[in-house]
Length: 251
Image (cartoon, one colour):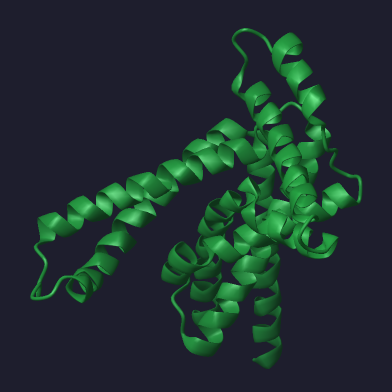
């Protein structure tokens, strides 16, 4: 019986890694569809979770509001879920859309590792403290996973696997090479180069008041790449919830 359980746990872990790889592969090969699916999943999940959260949270902020009316909860929850869905969809699009396939491959690798780390953390929290993966992942995991993704991109840049384009070259492309009506992929590629240039500028600026190592850490924290945490946390919570459901169903 113990051997069977160990084997089943191994199958579940392999399925977890396969699910993470599938999500990264999906984003890499079909960025527009991936962004649409991400926005939809975030909105649907948010409708359920935001309304539950608001039922407990509104009385905490508003004195005398013992039992909030359901229409108010649904309205506020729907607006918040819609905004988060749009943000997650845009973050997914600008993460995976582009024209440089080599860059996008490494981005997909970092995204997969970040999502797997998030799913593993949620699983550990669920086992040790009975944390709900859906709720914790949706409300608490976006920021740390965003920082992890941003740090991964910074490491690849420092290693030379991702290039940094200077402001002059970006200006040249913007004026002379970008079509009058650029595609979303072309805009996303330029946006990534702008992000990289901005991060480099932040490091240079902060080096005047702190060490280079601390400047790089601050640049990681303020980078636009942190927004990808909204996407990674969504899929990490889904995968972790599925894994915990499978584990609890084991004999």
